Image 1: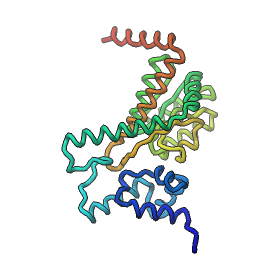
Image 2: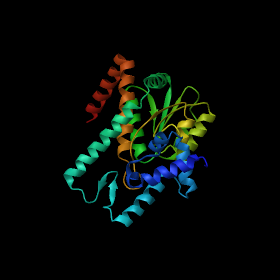
Image 3: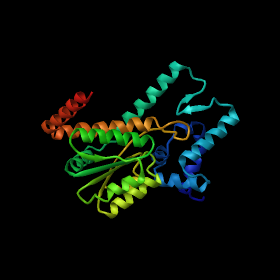
Image 4: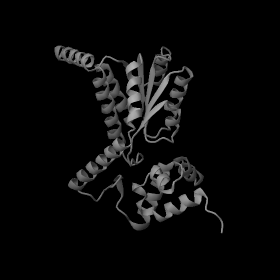
Amino acid sequence: MKKKTVFDKIHEYIIHNKEHLEHISSTKIAQDLDVSQASVIKYVKKMGYKGFSDFKISTIKELENKFMISPIIHNQVSVSDNEDIIIKKICADEMNSLNETREGIDVSTLKEIINLLNKKSKIMVIGIGSSGIVAQDLVYKLIKIGKLAFYYEEPHKQLMQLSSFDKNDLVIAISHSGETSSILNFVEKSKSKNISIFSITSGSENSLAKMSDYYLTTKSEENSLRSSAMSSRISQLFLIDVLFINLIKKNFSASMKKINKSRELVQWKM
């Protein structure tokens, strides 16, 4: 009897779980089958799709058309749900993402990242779309505790600032997919200058995680082609808050003085 290949296992898994695909991530398939996430991505690309999200959307639409399933707006929320059900489903979805993200934090790695953030002279934070909003929040928090931090939406301004960075500085890249080309290009340029890279992304197998010196991962069943990134943004903001509070704890007196001074200046201006 012919031995099953990795692709055979993945194919059978998807066939058997087709109707539940909306709630299954490439990471879960990899874990359930004890294969790499990269193998799952290679499988869907071999099937002619750009990535796992494209594959999910196409398959789910096919099922909706075949069985007249109520169209899905976001993850488990369908157009037939009333307001109360939508509230409960979104709350459950985001709580689940937060709990899974919390469980995935390696405390020893977190401590190393805190030390890295604490000692670096300048910090550039990059992100696009909803990850860009999270990047801005991180920069705002870092500035409040006296760190020299930057965020620029325009790529040419990012590169201009990067020209002043060296090995004593840090680039923080935030990307749910970990495959955004402009983010990867910027990280590559940063690495060529021996600048440390820390990323917040959705898994250890994507390109951004592999290029990073340190990374923290978020867990969310995000369907980015259907709606705005919601669960992933919540998980990213959670990690930002974890970093911020730990940085304050590390230099409590100095951090609180700077936070209070910032608050006084803002109140005076208002």
